[in-house]
Image (cartoon, rainbow, N blue to C red; front, side):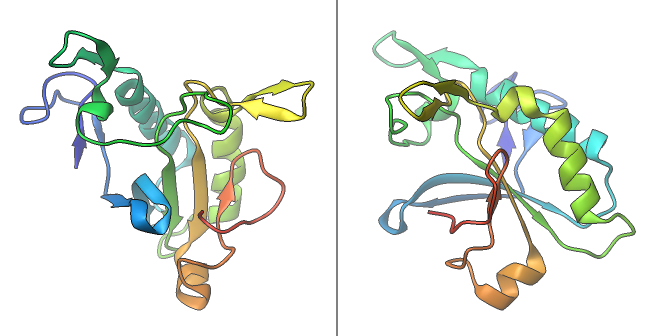
Length: 167
């Protein structure tokens, strides 16, 4: 699905983000999730450029029918506010399917470093992070999904120390 940083939903601009899958399952606790499948042929730099495109799309503002400016993605989907009333972008899930020659563990480490400005929150003394305007990036492997299913603790959000469930 095209995620236009320029152009329109019907006629997106060249070079916009292109999600492999868009998941909306609010009844299961997943209001909106963009999914990118990587077969381990692309470098961390190429994936980082894709994440830049997701950020541009997430930052794009349009006027709604009432004349109020809001993120373009809000014209198609709804997500709840963050836990502390911050407004993060919808999460991006990168699923690595180890077919190609690249080691996903190496690519993930490089990708986290290259894209830190997009996902790293601001720490507050109250013991929490704010992710206002940030893109939650979550990674997993196809093998882990097959073994443990989508409800398993197989998802690693950038900046977190261990795997968690998607919810």
